[in-house]
Image (cartoon, rainbow over all chains, first blue to last red; front, top):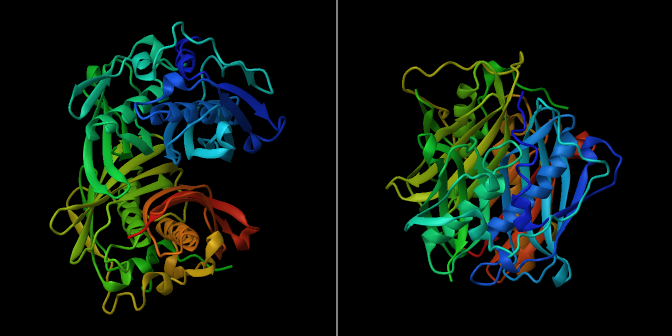
Length: 271
Length: 276
């Protein structure tokens, strides 16, 4: 049994991505759970080349996919274990439309297909991927959402904070970045939010390649929870090919004896 | 419907794992290494290695490690990713795997691919779901010393290019429709199509679709595969939908259905293929 550390913790990360969510096709069987979302304001999520950062897209995918998986897992709830996202568009007009559908709802795991489309570019696909979540049984019961789920976008911080600044991502050396595990970046379980880990992975991969590099493809395995911090992401180059640099990123909880929290592989396009 | 081989007989004498002439070394402490000789039948026209074959190789390494890590329970492959840095290769290739996480419900593995000079050829990750052991599961021993075994038998080896040899048949290139029959030759120990072979089918589907749209042959560089259900009846049939195409690369979303099981969706994949 696992308990939510604080039911209010975990809402903060969505203040930066500002995802609104809505359940469709309700009521239905768990395997038919379908959640859509929208992100209106992209400006503070953009990187130096004007595209929405991969870390932000991964966080959105984790948010909509995780909510879809959680609703399918009721009365249990879920924690992300594996997020795979292929990002295919370099320019993002916005707003972005999010879509998550359950592909498999098992006793121990839920698989959701996630797609992000650009409503401002005739629905062009921005990213496509799969989120796998493990099913847990919270001691205090699952979060109390009305059905069909409708979650408005939370109020944005004033002033609006750029993505990396919100998460406190800072360079450590030429191939390493880090962030402190403070309440603002924790999820409802009280551990480092999957979106924060994704932002850190994206930042480390791009930082290691250098310049205004853009992360195009991420496979992220969440291995263990981050509780103490700082979370440190170290990137290592696996190889170079025509479409970019292949980079492996390992994220450790430095305050917990460098316990490995996550491993990722990313394709990064150099300028 | 076919009969699954008894666990003690796996792999059978005639099996893709034997014809790829794999040698695997398991070590205490959660690492394994496999070697495979490069032959023209597992190479692309550019001289790089066939991604479907590499998927089988990493699945064997990862599956072996996960099965030991999950003892006394059993495992099922949940997802497999493969990222390649393709270039012409000769000699042997080496796949080195290690356990990244050994949990109550999942085991996570990574596998590094190298040529026999130690240069990187790619990187793979796999997640395995831990399942209660059933009578038909293979028995797995604890690895308490270095244990090397070869799957090769006298006369083992592919007799045709890989796709042809395993009966991957292209039905409709533009929509990435490829068929693969279920035979003992490509089955896993449960009698379903082996996970690496399913990856090979997804790879072939995307390669066909991207190549058909671009008008030139392409080679796969990335695979992201999620297994939803075992393909127990067969044949399986793929369908690919292009997500993006540039002059050099294309990305396809691939679904694989078990035609003999009422077109049950078994696998979803995202595949990137590009000009060699």
